[in-house]
Length: 382
Image 1 (cartoon, rainbow, N blue to C red):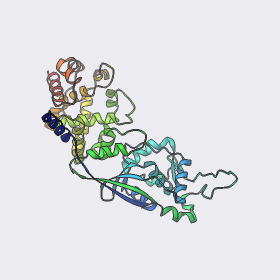
Image 2 (cartoon, rainbow, N blue to C red):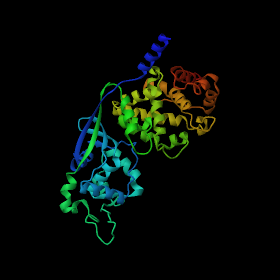
Image 3 (spheres, rainbow, N blue to C red):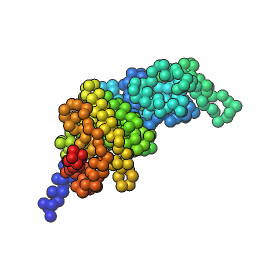
Image 4 (cartoon, one colour):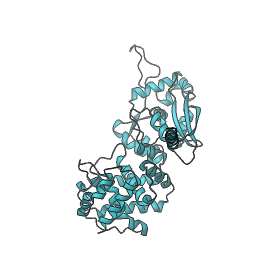
């Protein structure tokens, strides 16, 4: 009995990683916060939802800053010295950014502004001054007694007058979180992002991954994700709000390049590849884009239903098996030569007993992943 208890204890200990985390409080004043956002020192991860506050709520927040009232602390992840990612507090930070710019985003343009912010690290002056995207940001504040005008109501940032200094030097407690060790494992950061973000919806692995491993490769995935040919295969015109489609693309490229190194945890495997992709050259990223386009062209005659499961959902394991089997020779030879893929071959693969077992039982186990790719190679190359 003692031996069995020790064995279980050792197994648990092996499954638990202890992290050394530093939490550093910073009392940034409003000017500092604005400059950090403007220069890219504070980044807004693209998984964060669009700006949703209306002008009244934003004005109430600015009023609190002017009056010196306590503000909930903001959580940041410190990537490096003076470089932070927002974990919790995006709405507050963007409100400061917009108010000092004296422009408030139009509701129907916020999704587009989200992408512009992602692409540029901030919003270019030409966009901020464009009335198609923004309106003037004048405070909308009313006292309970409507007959008494609020001294801040209707004021822009430049017109704060005597209140301007108290606003600019008001501080907000910003908790900067940094992982000290282990240095080659970002596991704790996934926990930090998912537990501390209070946006109302728990972040999924791909949303966090896109933040931690943001790169030009990720931008390329976003481009091919918008391709009409890929949307047809995926089966939905609209892009997935929670990046499920992006994750499939990332996973497929990871398996194409490194499936021989797969060791039983798909999430960790994708993380490692995403981290490695941060160092990809411009030429390599362009090649991967063209390779995927060549794959899509090879799928022209295939009906989207071929990649669906029995329940009508997109079959991820089937797709990445077909992608790897079809593109691997071209990838190894650094060419774009992918033969036309026949729908009947994919149907044969779906009906293959060994492949079917590998996509329905223990799908992330090493044997299952390798069996799927092996069967896909065998059947599609007939």
